[in-house]
Image (cartoon, rainbow, N blue to C red):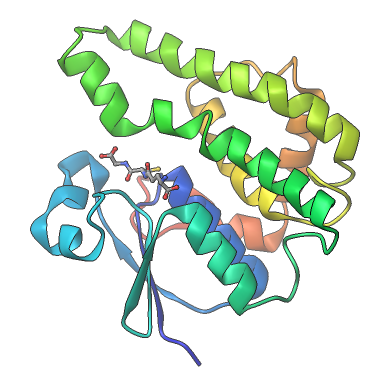
Amino acid sequence: MSMVVLHDYWRSSASYRVRIALALKGVAYDQVEHDLRTGAQRQPDYLALAPHGLVPALEVDGMVLIESPAILEWIEARWPRPPLLPADPFEAATVRAMAALIACDIHPIANLRVLDRLRGEFGASDAQVRDWIVHWITQGFAALEPLIARHGGLFAFGDAPTLADCYLVPQVYNAERFGVDLVAHPRLRTVAAAAATLPAFARAHPQAQPGAAA
Ligand SMILES: N[C@@H](CCC(=O)N[C@@H](CS)C(=O)NCC(=O)O)C(=O)O
């Protein structure tokens, strides 16, 4: 059995993706929390492990993986059951496209270091920063909604959880945190809410993590 250690932060949505996948696969792991509010992700010890200074990082038997999309693909290859990608290549690419809409088009521009720079270097107010976050999540969700309407069932793609749900549920958690109005995205809202009730998703929820704020 592999020794798996997840370096994460309870409210990090990129870490939340990995927690969901590990829980869906039934993989046991240890957790090391890095408090992003205190800049723990930029401490030398952590940078030696993860030079990009972001969570998550996954240690497996002494080897380190970074970047949640790569980590999720590795988890899928290492523990194929239950599958989180459809067997059909076109369908698998569609699931990856849904994931990329979140991982590439929404998440990076609303990340902590980006928001800190908007505030620190460009003098953005809290209201402007919130407006920025809401704008980019809303744009991304507007693209995702028709894909879920076309391909979704009980989940974002079909009737079983896929990698798309591993990305969607944390992004909806973020959206709700920042008060994004989800009324225009009914399918997206419904599948994310349904997925969130599964035990694996509940175990991965930020509030269920050891470092979570009361
Ligand atoms: N592309 C990376 C993004 C990781 C990422 O941005 N993590 C955030 C938390 S969700 C972080 O560590 N932020 C710290 C910072 O911005 O300084 C991935 O998917 O793993």
